[in-house]
Amino acid sequence: MGEKINFEETIKQLEEIAGQLEKGDLTLDETVEKFETGMKLSKQCSKTLEEAEQRITILLKNENGDLSEQAFTVQD
Image (tube, rainbow, N blue to C red; front, top):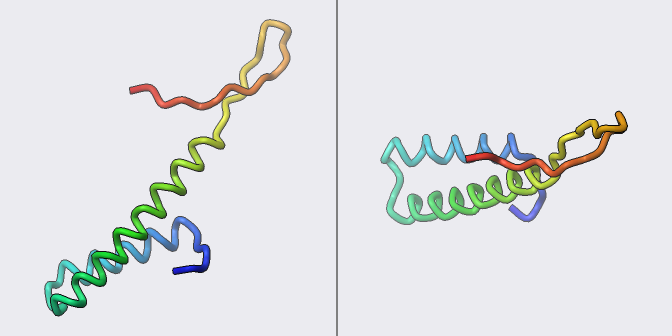
């Protein structure tokens, strides 16, 4: 997992792990290993999403008609 993979590939791997865990035919050791790998991938996805959110900006026109950037914020 040292190589950088994209978000979509990480999600695909998570789905595969979830499918394997749902089958219930893994040994306890295999289950723990898959769970640990899934948690690492999940954290990687969360980090990627947080970084993407920080990069998103909104372009707004000011009163002079010029465009200016404003940080994107999520409203609850």
